[in-house]
Image 1: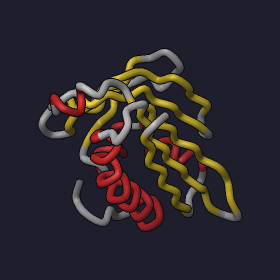
Image 2 (image 1 turned 120 degrees about the vertical axis):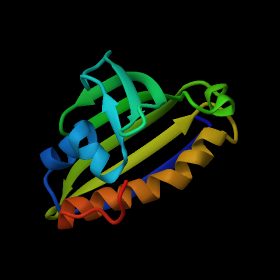
Image 3 (image 1 turned 120 degrees about the horizontal axis):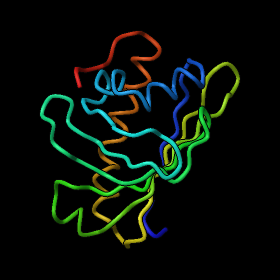
Image 4 (image 1 turned 90 degrees about the vertical axis):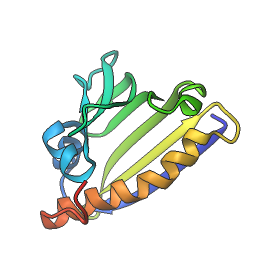
Length: 145
């Protein structure tokens, strides 16, 4: 991969609760404002849709699913022509126990040099993952998604 964004955070929760937060629509809309439609099994289709608008934002396929440890998504933006034109990216979630918390590593990669999709997600992931962490640890999101 030629363009890459990596974000690591530690969350006081269990692997299963974090996995559920990442894969279940009823939780996604709390901290993210979207829902993801997928069986979250290798080979299944994947879509990210605005929770209130129904707008299709992103789509792709599950490349790997090892609940509750690892999820790999083939991911393409569907609503901005210039980002869609870059083709598919790869997003990997890795969840590992680490001294009483869960280490979450999100790696988003593209084969495109200086990918504008990676620039876009680099601005979005920190806010989304901070909101996720706060919600899992306190029961309240930092902001309404």
